[in-house]
Image (cartoon, rainbow, N blue to C red; front, top):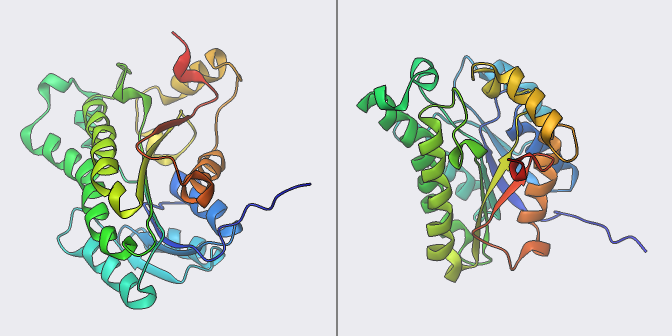
Length: 258
């Protein structure tokens, strides 16, 4: 007998949808298919036309601007969500940025400003989201999910400063899991392997990374944003109620290979 898997009755925020191929959209698509009610965000007016039809497809209850580098925008999203719903059950954070020239350069040559901005946007924005989510989850708990990458653990060519930044993000997940567990809030990082997204295309020789992933992964294929979405849905669900502080890979096993 099959047991239906459902997120009916759950509400949450998906941060970081850029286009149809983005990991954030893959997550939102699966969450909506399983019955979750969504607030989705777009970066700015330039990005809005690309995200608007996706928000419509998702029948998103709220569709709001959110550039986490701009003071007050993340706070405004949570304020609107509290006004509309009162409480939430999850936040999916799929936001990362670094100056392109510094991403391709040596870490040792990174600038103070570039490194600080990359850390703020890619890591501290998740911490800020957790702080804003906490009062909206105190009644029933919830789940906070962020996206990381294997370059946090091993040196990946052309990943530059993002390796240390993602390592900081993963450490933050563990500390947040410890601090928020008493409120029933669970925190995880999900680590997708290389997949054809706009964000990935910013890395030099990204096609080579994808080829290597297919060649050397035990399953000999790439994951997809929808694969990431299915794992994210499980972590949000009550089925994962005893799991927190984890880093989980969606890379066809590539991370286990030497």
